[in-house]
Image 1: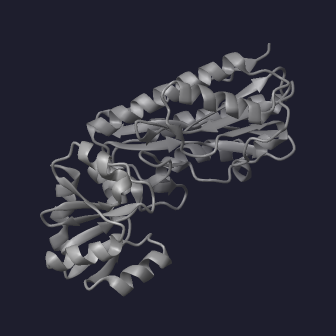
Image 2: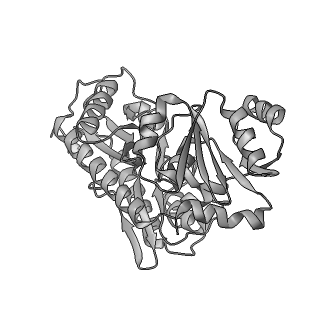
Length: 358
């Protein structure tokens, strides 16, 4: 069953006649059509799927290979939406509750149909990946592993964090990535103690640990991988911390299975970090879902996520970390596919501590 038909089947239980979509990732998920944010919308009725956009997209719509979808070219997106809804006798229109207030104001003014907001309706559908999506995520993860290998062969003391990030960015795009799903994180030395610091002009020095956290779109789907390596001789405490984080990562992967609760999955790794005395230095969740976006459902799983339960063909990250102010930090992140047959680690780059420049 197509994704559009799966959505249409929900209408009766949702007590709606149609669903209105503006999020560009959700439009792509349902139709396979790339519409930039703000350049139109998708209306799914009980029998139709209509992309409402302007003449900049006319040729692309004509080339779209999806028999379920038709296009309407207009410069008045929401006036046209209202006319279509009236013509098709849509009296109750569902919409994503993530729309801006400005857009809601326009809809409230123009639409004759009653408007009903829905929370994460399509995002919940996106949690479970089909075989094509799984293959796309495998391809993306493979490119990330290769990109990291390239980085290890070319990074050295004396480079700035920003140079390293730019080097990786160029290689990823040259080898098939369309763009980054978030700004690449490259942190070294004391900067590595900040989980989400961005690449700076700091020079990487001998004795630094370097954390690289990056995600790139390949055919619409993004992986999300973090590795930490050392440059030259590093603080013995950081060597120990590395082993603890790596052990925690492995424990979470071992504990992952269909039906596993988010808090229990988190505990499998967090208890190792806490037992080692670094509980206060691990200050974020254990991971999150990925796919068309770098953060998909589950948005995060950690100590309090009892309501998160892993499902077959879900893809999540596993990213424990320890961050010690004034010394540095370590994070190692893998992407894993949950199946009834077990767990598949998609990000295959080595996780043992690698020391460059020795």
